[in-house]
Image 1 (tube, rainbow, N blue to C red):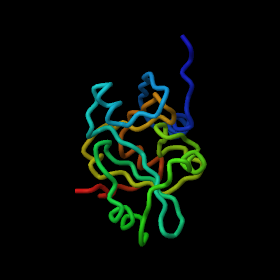
Image 2 (cartoon, helix red, strand yellow):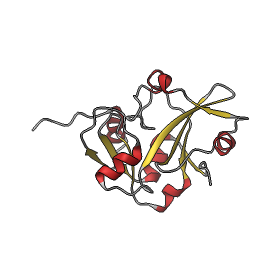
Image 3 (cartoon, rainbow, N blue to C red):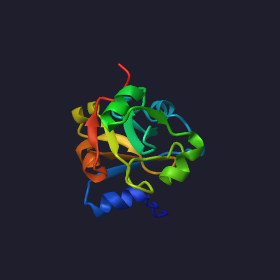
Image 4 (cartoon, rainbow, N blue to C red):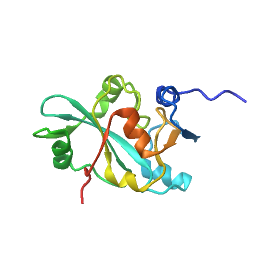
Length: 159
């Protein structure tokens, strides 16, 4: 059996001695998180997507929210201490993060941007995030995600 190739995110978790599990599935193209969760029978509440936005100051921010939720741009700006916030254009994801759309994870981006994890994650022992490439997921404790990214919990979704 071929050895599983580690992503940057996995190497960082290993280096920090953070426990995680990986799950891989067939995926050649970008597929939205809800479709993947449906395919794999995963709970929408524990499956998180990684979004990148840019503040009025031109600083990048990373928001990790449940896949069925929508980022509240006002709340996101408030959490980041910005006047306003807009989503990073899809064509710029790789340039800014080093990851591709659908394989973007808050761990191990080109630079360490401020990370905000939706506060609902606190309720779970383990959440699911992208593993850093299409077809790879990481299951880990949300507090460990906060620790390894220097992130913080925030109320950042549309109510």
